[in-house]
Length: 260
Image (cartoon, rainbow, N blue to C red):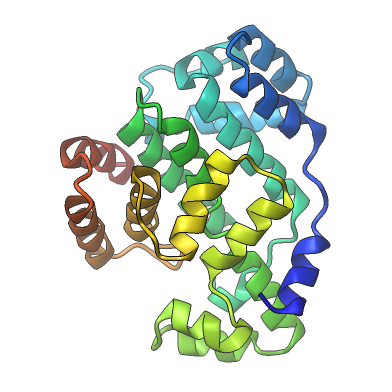
């Protein structure tokens, strides 16, 4: 990892205490939903964001969710951690993804779709915590790349080539690292737990040796940050089949998310 990337990562502010508190609660076997709800209610912005997401049709809930207690109860404690971290990251980083030709809103819309796919696919599984949380932040490294390219007046040149060249090859050419490799370094910088870091490390090193990493590879392929494409959907299902993941549940999850 070159110095300019590491300098950008090291300049990122620490995540707020609410994130640490939520991580502590969700990792505590003796903690209850009431403990988690209390922390969320202390942050009005977090409360508003959570209710907005909970009422998105992407998650397949039948009725309107009007309070935090209900939202946490429906999602479960562990998926809430992903929301909290994602909202905190959104407020902690400068988002300018113009080098990729997308807006901050587009970036977060894709992140929500990825998380909704993870939630509907792995609901009830012990792997949901890791997969759902990581699914939000798979492309966070692209923010660093974009900021570097903008500062070097290379953003327009990069964006032009992006339509003709493999994204990861282009990232390597311009900044000597891919999005997922930088995401891995960001996870370490923010001291995420080993459970969250390990699948991202596997993806960065292209060592898809566990189900979490394989599922995340399928999710990021299914909903491409640069725009959805039928070819990506097909490729994602092919990957899931090769990884021997649950295709029936994936298809049902995809239908919920794609249908909305």
